[in-house]
Length: 129
Image (tube, rainbow, N blue to C red; front, side, top):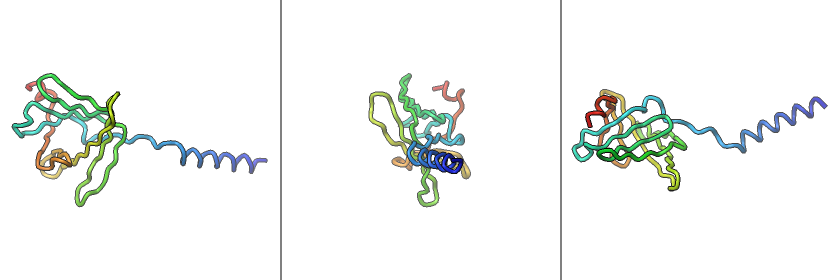
């Protein structure tokens, strides 16, 4: 009887691990913060990254808020690409792929705009917008 209960318990654990979704991964802490490009075309824009949200500042006082539903980190050559699945209620999910560099100078690049660099700024610098 004891063997049957142990086997049943092990079976339930294995079933749970196989059939229940994995916990969602969050954006790595080292990427959180406020990011702004020094490119003049994007002077009124910013990215605010938290472990659970991506906020796009898109002009004087307009923002777009997306919730991170999944995070995948993939190696692409010598760099790691962080692929985010983003959700906004009432809309289809979108993907955003970021490259975080922290060699000599820290910056972010969007995978689809690799020539555009986003630098970390402080809350005070954002208020100067």
